[in-house]
Length: 231
Image (tube, rainbow, N blue to C red; front, side, top):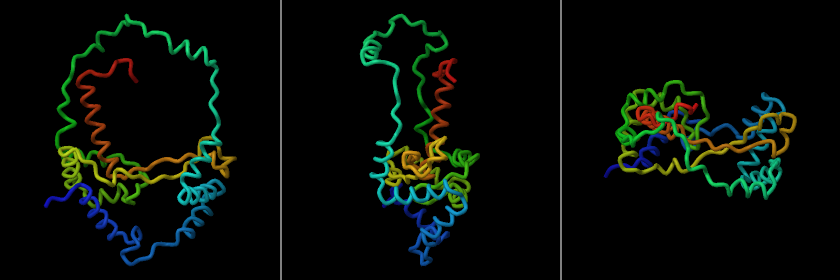
């Protein structure tokens, strides 16, 4: 029978990891000790990096506890509005006679692009100007994809099936979470509240999103669906 997108991605992951044994211990090469690698990173990056390694290790072990500490210790945002003033502001009706610029009064513009098959050329274009971003939970980088599928043949077929069958790969439902130091918190990097967790999606998912984003923007612009006052 036919392979599902989830099965296809699992096969590709095993293939890419087999070419880079350090990514996967099951290929017979033991990866470097995690704590040794973390200590090396910490020694190279100074105090903030050392604190990041420690907090990242804590987060990996006790994610709920660390997130709870961040929430509890977070600075509360103060408001200059009283409760009565807020109720009054929310109770006001929206003006009925709003002068909408004629250029913004557009008819429905049919979307004929986002639902069509993805071409290899679109994947190749998505490869351009990619930053050296961290991989997701599958540990597959953008460079890995460009090496495995330089012409975009596999990914274009995969993305086309996902669009046609409206099926999301199981791998795209998970993500890797890392800790990032908040701006201006260099002097308090040893405190959990100085950090925030961010979710890192798989690079394959990000490539798909980049292609779909360009299609949607193209549809919006061709239909004149964005106000000229929109930045």
